[in-house]
Amino acid sequence: MSAGARVLIIDDEEIVLDVCREILEGDNYTVATAPDGAQGLSLAEEFGPDVVFVDLKMPGLSGFEVLERLRTRDPSIVPIVITGYATLASAVEAMQKGAYDFVPKPFTPEEFRLITRRALEKRRLVRETIALRREQEMLRENFAAIVAHELKAPLAAVQQNLLLLTVELADRLTDAQKERLARLRSRLDDLLKMIDTWLRAISADLGKIRERFLPTDVAGVIAKAVETVQPYAARKDIEITQALPPSLPAVHGDEGTLGEALTNVLSNAVKYSYAGGKVGVSARVDDERILIAVTDAGVGIAPDELPYIFGDFYRGRAGVTGEAGAGLGLAVTRRIVEAHGGTITAESMPGKGSTFVITLPVRRAAEAARDRPEAQNRPVAPLGGAV
Amino acid sequence: MSEKARVLIIDDDPDFVDGIRGVLEAAGYQVDAVYNPKAGFEALKRRPPDLLLLDILMGRGAEGVMLARKMRKDPQLSQIPTLIITGLREQIAFLFPGQAVHPHILAVDELMEKPVDPQLLLDRVKALLDAAARRRVAG
Image (cartoon, rainbow over all chains, first blue to last red; front, top):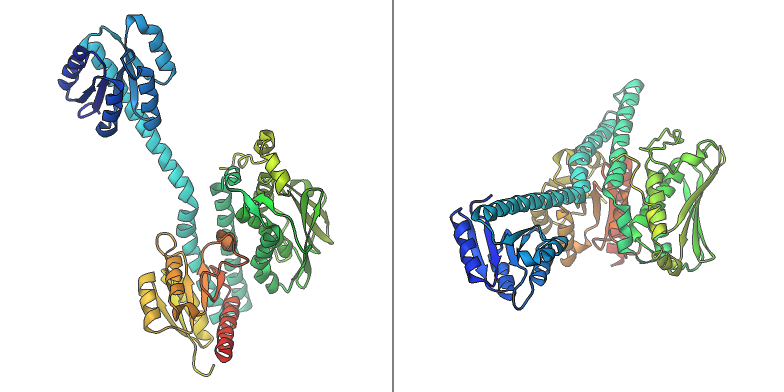
């Protein structure tokens, strides 16, 4: 990238500026010069240099200050200090402060060219790295949206037409054919659910949700979660009962992910319930903590499975109607709850049902917990080697 | 409902629309479909349907949401019962934090996730139309 590369030289010695300009212009660089730090900085603004040479010893603004201000404005500019033998120690100091290289005076044209070429190579690498990183961030941020649309939309369209065919052909198909159609639908359903769960696990940086914690109304979160699950419960004739105190204190948290956590637990309760059964949601305050319990009278969880249900990729034995998931729902739920400084536990009796309890610190305690970094780092580890 | 109720579908996926249209037509509804938000808005203005099925994630981003916002500003269109159908999973309610229970992008709306169970779709459509009829009687 040497042709047309832009080099700015800041030095109070006119002779140095002239010599440098002469050397570089012969090599097709675009060169600008400034006799002191202040003028150099304002020139850098409009000139947009790739590389800046700064003399360390100048009247007025010191070379160090110029370096620092250059770096804060554009960290991708490659700064190089020019220094006499007497200030070699400061050259080292300058490099410690972020200068990429130094040119000791006096220097030969060849030395100067070499250092410039190296600096430009560095500049190219820095810019490539920045561009790559930006691309990765974009991809990561938009991954969920891209996949949701590109992958899910065709599957949903196929499923919708299968559903229609099922209705349209109801009196023309044999039972075996109907059964096959039902299996097709169920496989597609699993696939759609798996995409949702994987998307969630990949795209959500749960460590970051703390940055947008706000005072959050737990009763509102519960109401939304119940409403979300309601249609699925109604299809299985399951009643969701609520026992909430007249008022609940706020938690310090993120409404979206908390709601998702609760929705996960509630839909599990519905999924593993028998048709016509009941699912109960209750909440109470105990010692600066809010306890939310979700109870079902469904199939339950075997004692030997119970310790593993919050781990990644754990899949429960099939639900009442043979439903199966990707095995990430409760793992994501646990991460969300722990990011809020809370806990989630489960008790279960096979054949009798399960109770999941989410405990969240009420707002004051939660805010204090933010000052304890070890409590923050532990719970939200990334998915174990999965993504 | 002696007349056939008119349902308008605005969704950019023709295959998905076919899957929905068949269910609704079999149940006796008269169905029209438009495949982009711009034409959708024009169709709404030209002849407001009894019920709108709206995909809110059309095109790049959420053009359907923009359409819904435009509808909300229009006194006539904002009263059309609207069933919002989206590829987003059920947490969509949580994409609109701070609202009581339901985003209510429009004054009258209901949310469903793609793909839609045919019976559930018919139940919701009927409920919305019945509620609209009751409002008309009351009003």
